[in-house]
Length: 475
Ligand code: ADP
Image 1 (cartoon, helix red, strand yellow):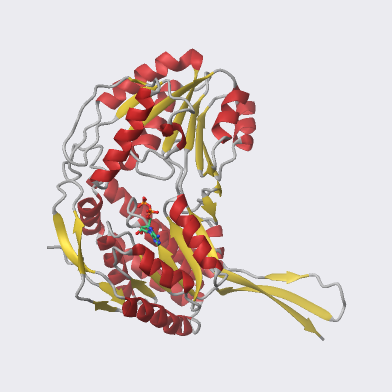
Image 2 (image 1 turned 90 degrees about the vertical axis):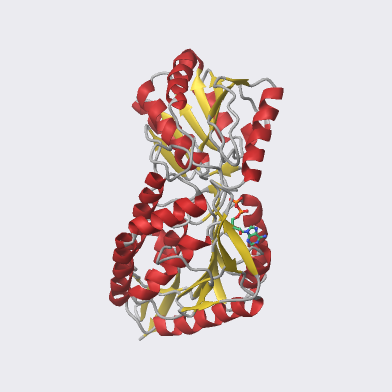
């Protein structure tokens, strides 16, 4: 048994248990890993109140001290990399090699914000009156609450908690009920690293709406940050309106991946494999609609089919596995319904029809996808490549932008004028050009339109947890 496996909520630096339990299941076997306690309302309020007490203590700290604590947290996460990755593969299903990569990636946010903690500069503003001295500076927003999803059980937590702590904020986190174990391990390590008691609380519950309602409607919580689906995000935004909270929302996407006829096709197909199949396609920045210029369509499909045929689906602990199970059976059912709808409306499946047990889903390629199909409009969140042929640049830009989402977009081109034109015309928060993997702690991650509000990563990610205070002095 792992020394980082816990089964109770973590409140004020202590484990908090209740009589009600729920099971955290291994998606590969659908067997229970462990029973964990479901936090009651008293626990939720206790977490909010202790976070408030911790915030008062944090106000007395300085940026260098918080930076040092964050660096210790980073070191502990890296020292426990193997254990954390195994915990992740067990509760989330992703291949162990990807889980190890996520620990590095998640830890990199902690290190980045340990550095950025020291850089929340203010401004001296030229006054309009000779007797005035105008300045502005940044202060922590206060108690933060966050809700995170299951697809990146470590990185989605560290990219919120690390900048919040760097800014001087305390945190109440409700991780996904499917992957609470990594979040608990992170909170335990943060406590060991020297986080003030109550500065990072984790609430376990399978009744997310109940816990979410208390967090969003609390007057003590001054900032709410969410990563998840657009539907739930809208509901939480509405709830946050009652107390006019600061909010950050990382919501769904429907990423276009465009291959122009002048692209290096081998690089484009390699990039697509990463952008599509990482985490079995269960990422909000996954390539969802693959637009290929008609003159190169056959070549691209051929190259892609050869690569897809080599992908191994299996238990994440098997070192040959490229694609683990989907998170739960309902997710697989949704993928299969989208594929069936597309095929009924004329899409052609290029790859073999392989049926696998449990939540395992074989990768597949569909050509002839069009806007009449549900798969064109919805996030697939599974290993399905949907290919759409196009003729002109203007046509593909119109198609790429004609969705309510605007998170990530990708395109492959070697024409420098086209690179500028297309990157400026895409209505997306992030654009990868000749690159399929773009997430990076040093860069601002986030969407436009219904893909969300705010940015995580970069210097911008710290500002999400800071308020600007303007001071006018008359001499
Ligand atoms: P996904 O489909 O990727 O799980 P969700 O948006 O359903 O995306 O879930 C993301 C997070 O939001 C999870 O932690 C989940 O428990 C939580 N959640 C889901 N529904 C609600 C809700 N009504 N209120 C608060 N949190 C919710």
